[in-house]
Image 1 (cartoon, rainbow, N blue to C red):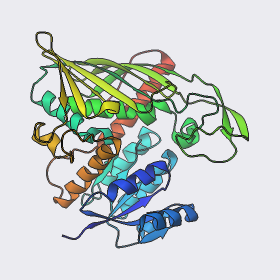
Image 2 (image 1 turned 45 degrees about the vertical axis):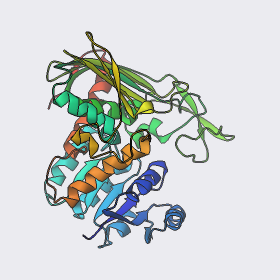
Image 3 (image 1 turned 60 degrees about the vertical axis):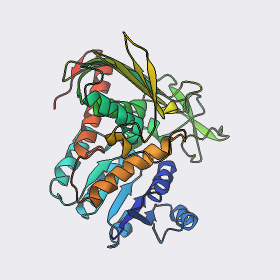
Length: 382
């Protein structure tokens, strides 16, 4: 079978993660990369042995050999670049959030309807950790009874000091949210995915804990800890912490918080789903295991084992038991699910996030921002 030729736009931190993931998927060929920084694109192409490199989106999309394109650019570029990819007829895998706001997201959803032959997805990669899929399978099959309560958090520490800076703090580049759009979106997507519930009402409290930061005069990469020697002190508008209480369409309730200032936490995404019969808990920093709790019996850990987990989860695990799979494996799993769906002729379940689902996350984020401003419950219309 002819391999799917892939182009990746944006050679920053997340773009390189896409490069490494695509190279691990058998049905794909990493054919081209692009970045407006031509030297960076050339360096990555040479480093990874990639055949083509381009300095513009237009050049990459004009290449008729390319079947699918990954958009790994900052948020403010998502609308225009995603539109061009869709119009080109190529398959689209966009980084999250889908767009800067829901108006843009809805525009993309409507545009995609004109191109039914292509597939479009958004990279909410935590869905495809095999133990997240195991949690989903157990909930779907009634192992915890009726879902009642959803709790958890997503905590990091990379914005802990006033010398830490990111474009995600700038509304004109990131949109009107930092922590909630960046990491809260992952939490909401994963919990809705595993439970089958949709969050429909929110009460939120967002905070900008560090209101003034030192912005480096020279560009730095995400997650770097170098203290800038030359900087401008700038006022910060986007939040670095937030908490949300919510209700779902199926009578569930829950609460979660996000923080990018919690010392010692690198990627602490966790959620606990409590049902009428049992509870399931998963933590990304120990992502090879799933905790299950009971009132009238022994609690236990379910350790990832390809021979023991459900058939649904088993599709997205590759290593034997006792060989821990990590963040990059789940990242690869999500991209693999996208390409497997294409390879299979677009049949079966779209296990990855669709544009419609990602657009709803954007709408949820806007409702959370509105709730925090008005100090009131906000309903999210479908």
